[in-house]
Image (cartoon, rainbow, N blue to C red; front, side, top):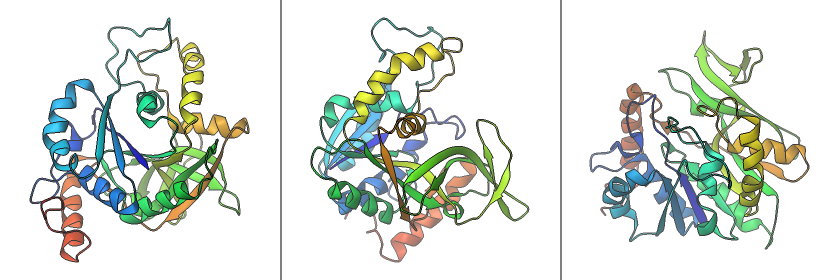
Length: 303
């Protein structure tokens, strides 16, 4: 099974390339723990989507630790990865979004189903287990059968500011009906969700399930991304400097067309991440507590 890791983000709120911030006493990063947990769950290939200029630093840090533990590939998210005949302004610097990033891995993934994660989030072992179980359950040549691992909102918060999460709405059979990208924050002892595309801010139950961008996809998602790319660029031709081609939007459109279904996979895992520089101390302490109780060997890859 393939694990695709989105690692081309600029990390603007953190103030640097946060994927390579050590979070334990031997220099491991959050991404090391994700790969360790994914391998235990049965994933046997990892595909990093990165900026080409970061290849050397990725290989000399993360790569040197994992390449002999799991089959590892690197692909590049480039602003030049566009439909034929399209271009972007030269002053555009920011990557074009998660859907374009995923498209960069099309040839490596091939016809396999796969899971996708962010590089700078600690997802927790149970999340990889439920994702792997879902992928293993799919009949061969399945199409349009996706999943999203849903976390309790309370398990995905930071005390240092707001976070962006997809609030999940689903039916009694755990089939996703709607994903609303929202800003979540603590206010007055409550969890307040504000839709990013407009709408009223409201308190939500802390147990409400939200998306942390851990998706499972059947392989034809790549064709859908490719087919929708030119129409996306046409629709956003008036603001080419800041538009983003995003996976949640693409998935929502596929659901609306009846071309895909998305199962919500519940997990009790607790997210950790460095959304803000002030978060790092808490992440380091949490990882240490997991190591101390034996969830991970000290040193992880340095046993």
